[in-house]
Length: 144
Image 1 (cartoon, helix red, strand yellow):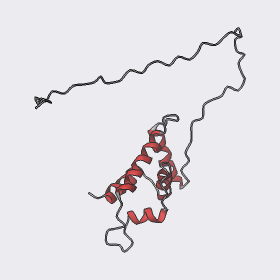
Image 2: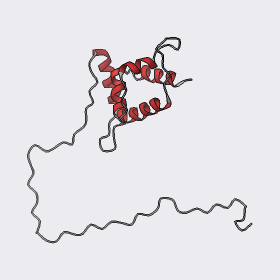
Image 3: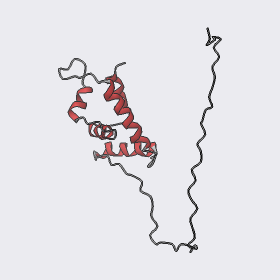
Image 4: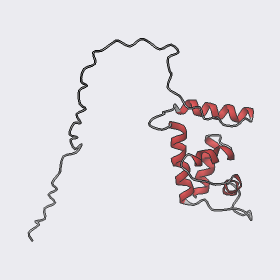
């Protein structure tokens, strides 16, 4: 199975259009035109057929992860994104990326008054290693 076949199957399974694929690739700062993407989806005997390289497929998959899951700071629900893609395909509209902005209260709540004392200093905890050092004994002596 070639990269072109994988790319085609993902495009069909996720119901993506060429402009949506361009937007997904731009999430990982990979610039490519719709015409170049169209060449990946042509039949192998077409004169303008282009082999999809590893770099293009890798960047598409990385962008797809960001597109579906969101970033660490702004997570998304993948099922909501797929539902938006379905609606965009049905209506022929453009894909809208809706970022969840933090909700600000409309009326500020009065803060409890605290005495103007000295603030406690920030103390960073010493980070312990996740995995302790392991000594491998493979039956070989280092001295030999």
